[in-house]
Length: 156
Ligand SMILES: [Cu+2]
Image 1: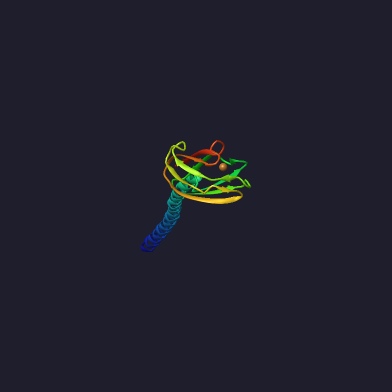
Image 2: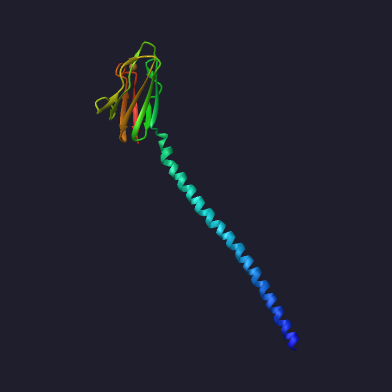
C-alpha cells in the first residue's frame, strides 16, 4: 500500500512537473510571441512616426532651393513653390548678351513689398539670391522683361 501510494504520489508529482514544465514552456512560448508582437507594434508606430516625420521634409516638395533658368527671354518655370524660411534661388541666365535678373516681391505683383533682387547682368551668367520668406503669395520677375519673365511663387 505504502509502496503503491508512494509510487502514485511520485507519478502524480512527475505528471504535475511535466504539466508544469509544458505549461511553462507554453507560457514562455506565448509570452515570446506576445512579446514579439508588442515589440513590433511600437516599431511600426515609430516607423509611422518617422514616416510622418518625413512629411514636413516632403512638404519640402516646396523646396528651400529653387533653380531657375532664363532662356530666350523666358523663365523655364512660371509657378514656383518654396518652403517658408531661408530660400535660395539659383538663377542660370543662358541668354548670351541678354540682361536678366530675378526680383522677388511679396504679394501677387510688383506693387507688393520688394524682398530683394539680383543684379541685372548679361548672360551667360549664374546668380544666387538668398531670402528669408514667409508663407504666402509672392511674385517674381525680371526687371528687364516683366512682360515675358514674370511668375508666381507660393511659399508654404
Ligand atoms: Cu530678362
